[in-house]
Image (cartoon, rainbow, N blue to C red; front, side):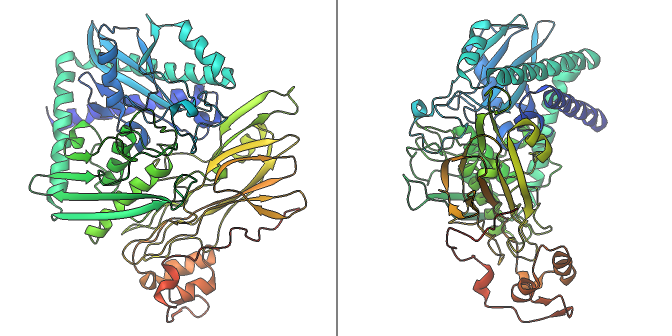
Length: 591
């Protein structure tokens, strides 16, 4: 197949995936879908190879093929008109809160593709009002409804037993059902467009295209790896402490790049066993997040599909905190905290091995501004509400060529999640957002600095508000690489009605009363390279914008913005790791 045809057909598939995504964005009901875009669409080949992902979240889409494969395993007689609901983290899903609709696409009775539409739910039926449960010792305590590739449509019609089960158990069932219809609509949109795609270009052409597209993608990956010198890396990090792990959760990532074999291997087998908490990674999240860390360091024009994935191997072991979980360990938070650390440690390994490849550590976790809120509307007869919010953002890492991305969100999402509209959140929920602000001097200093952290202040109006959250990067802030500095620390504080400030636990559930406000401090990103050689014009611009203070510019970057001259920097340790602060910080009450 000639290159032009290959390019046209691959672009057509991306267009179809984007139409699926737009269908979901425009027809969903929860703000998790319609504002934050916490969803991903993908197309999988008939032999279960990841084919097209467009703008899907890395933590979601790399493993879409694993879920598609379970259709054949569980429903060998599947046919046109079927649809399946899959959210089982033990058979290919990310975590139970990500509901996936799978639709096999047939043309004249032949299975050509499977459409995959995955979306994080506002609620999944957990035992408490949150889709993230850090303290759940097992899946039973977690409590989510789990569907291991369960058929929900036959002949394009809902199987009502399954729908009734969900509506009777999931909080705010009308919200869930609206999102369910949006997922099915997006999957069916992809089905129609793919059928038209096959009929327009012909079955033989499409069969040939799929094979050649995978082969082309593999060749691109081979070429990229063979340009890299042989190398090995070993990075370690630690997630902040939780009650069952008072010293934190250690992580160990080892990698090797072999240009002769044109392979990249990431070894996660040296990590600890699963823990009795909800932070264990699912198998697919272990694969997805390590793979995302690899692709973050390669040419972005390489297609991310089954072909390029042939050259990547993620080594896992059973009963491992970032490996293959052993039932019934909970993986409630597999898509965030440890997953964020895993992405970062992988890309930091490349920065360790090569001078111009890799990135520092990006900020992750779920501070209260990214938590799950729930309660009752005071003006709507006590109507319940529940949803994850996305107020503020966490800072992206510095790289060898660029500063970190301010609205990065978290490593597992790679900047593809959107921040909430403050006005829409205030209309939808009984909350008042007092502040969303960039925090001066919170970046990881570097030749290319990490993005700054963000502070969000909000609270309930006329009612109580429950917030479920799990902070990371307070004890172990996002680290820099190649002489870059660590970013400012995350935190969670409470401002009482009298203006006094008290500390919130780093993880848990906070109940705010009318007039109280939570202060959610989101970490910045780690820096890349020695900050004392940062371009003075870039330092000057940061000072002018209020991102970096004049004092920090002189002490850390060796630049005096008042005179425009270089000055001696402070002791080298000053910027590497910020001191652990007292937990209560002087955040003033606002009028």
